[in-house]
Length: 395
Image 1 (tube, helix red, strand yellow):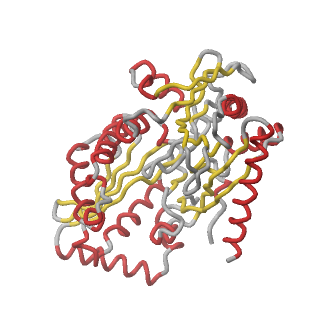
Image 2 (image 1 turned 90 degrees about the vertical axis):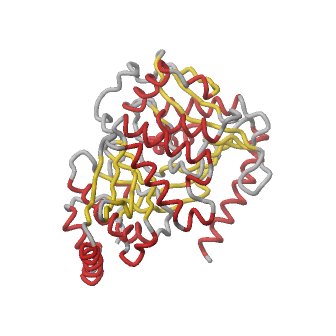
Image 3 (image 1 turned 60 degrees about the vertical axis):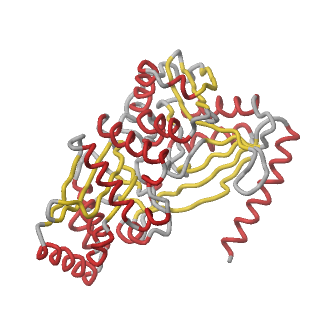
C-alpha cells in the first residue's frame, strides 16, 4: 500500500540550478566550530537564510527562525555549538553539534548532531554542490577533534536524497566504519492524485461516510468552517489559542503541553512568528461558532512541507475534529508549489499512517572517527548494536 518515498524529489526547489555559493566543482571548505550566540546577529542570520534558500535539501528545523529560538530556549548554557563550513568565503553548511558522555542509556561518549524533542529532522543545511565536500570536511573535523568521543552519531536523518547519497560515497571512499543503527518509516503525503481522488482512494466508503456524518453533525450544532492561513494574519492570537487548547487536554494534565514549560512555550511562540514572517508557515483551523476546536501548524519549505503541531478541544472528541482537520489538509495535494509533505510523526501514529500512505525512511547513523584504535573500539560497539537491531527485527 505504501509507496516508496525514495523515488520522490525531496531536494530544495533550487536544486536544478547552479548555487551562487559554489563556483568551483570542489571548493575549498574552511571548517569552524562556533558558539551559537555568534550567529545571533542580523548579518550572520542573513547569510544563514541565504544558505537555507540554496540548500540541497530543506530542513526548517535547522533554519535560523527555528534553530535560534530552540537554542535560546533549550540551551542557555551554550553546550550546543554550530559546526559551520565556508566555501570560497561563503557560508556553505551548518549543523548544530553537541558532545555527550552518554549514548542514550549507555555511558559511551560521542559527538552528535543536536536534535531535541520538538526537532523532527537532523539534516544539515548544505549548499547545493557541496554535499561530498561537506561530509569530507565534517568527518575530518570530527577526526581531529574527537577528544574522548568514540564515534560521530547522526540522528533523525533521511535515508535517501542527495546528502545521504553523498555520505555513503564519502564513507565508501574513505573505508570508514559506519552503519545505520536504527531505521523507521514515517507517514508522508505524496501523490499525483488530486485531494478528492486521493481521499476516496485511502479511505473506505464506510470511513468517508462516517467522517462526513461527523462534519454534518457539527454543522447542525453551529456554524463550522475550515480556516487556512499562509501568512502572518492574526498570528499572535492564533498562537495563544493553540497553546490554550493544547493545555486544556491530556497534555496539559500530564504536564507535556508546550505551555507547561517556559522553554517550549517560548520556542513555539518565537517559531510561529518567525516562520510566518518568512513565509514558512501554514496554519489550519476547524472553527465552530467562531471558535477554534482543532488547530494545525506545519512548516513550509518548498517543494515540501513538514508536520509540526496539532491540537484539538477534547470536549468535541466525539466529532473527531483532529481527523477532520487532517482530511482538510489533504487539499495541499492541489497546490503546485508543494509536492510532498513529511508528517514528522511517529511511525505508529494511527491517523497519519491511515491518511498519508507514502513513507519516508528516517534513521540514525553512527560513524567511526579518529585513529585506528578508536575506530576498532567503535567497530565492536557498532557490531553489538547491529546484532541487537537484527534480533529485535526477528522478534
